[in-house]
Image 1 (cartoon, rainbow, N blue to C red):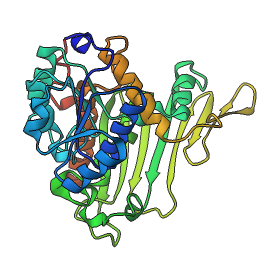
Image 2 (image 1 turned 45 degrees about the vertical axis):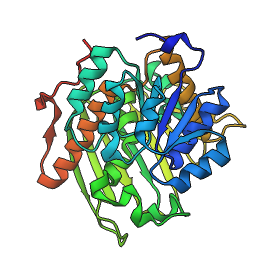
Image 3 (image 1 turned 180 degrees about the vertical axis):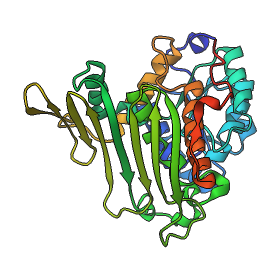
Image 4 (image 1 turned 90 degrees about the vertical axis):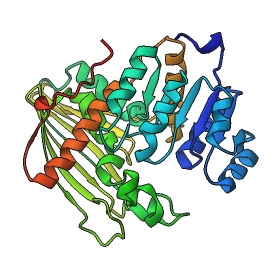
Length: 349
């Protein structure tokens, strides 16, 4: 399939009217999309969205499919991502799926095959790849600014009840195993971007569990150790516990060091040659929603076949494998060799 029906803007069905679905709908409208419909099981949410954004809402999914959307945006709890994406793919819809792709491997291969057969455009939510700081880090690594990468350390932590203070955190998908919650899948951005920066992961080990007093049935803390095919090693720390939001990345090379801090809005790197630190700061007018706007603009260009997706379902399936291997490592208390996993995520070729 090419550019949907030759349209300047395709028609969109956003499934899920929570905070991320609302954000995507709002950003699509700001970018000029006219045909945006939203479905949510909560009629109250639908009423709010219709009033707030002026979008059409549908009472059930069947009404949504009857509109024959060109694109479906999957913004439901994680455990529902693949079934809905399959429904869309069967109807020839291009797919934007919020991260992570799923909470299990069941039916993922079938989805990949449908996407490959119909040549559908897909993007899995990877907004951190559009953060100016991480874009700068990627450029520095591509230019071998710090030489050969030896190790990396990334972390993110934020107190779960503060994520959406307007709702009971115990009812959200993050807190509920059956919906695909837990910090490993919730914070899969860190797994994705460290792979983006350092390449394919070969081996993973992990310690994880619910160690805090949060009233959830998912893991709230995870410490992962990775070995990359390049030989570099990586550490990832994820938690639902830190009261002060923290998100950082450190890359250690044999010719220098790169450090990124989300809250400071700054990248700094040290050169062994000059013995000096250099700095890059976010643009003065930058604000977090710009990541999502840039991500959606990228997706629109992908729909026109002008760019290749930053993280399509095939690559997102590989990231999911790493996350699930980490969960398995924590349960079995042993290293997981990803090279021994034969499940095929290269179905595009």
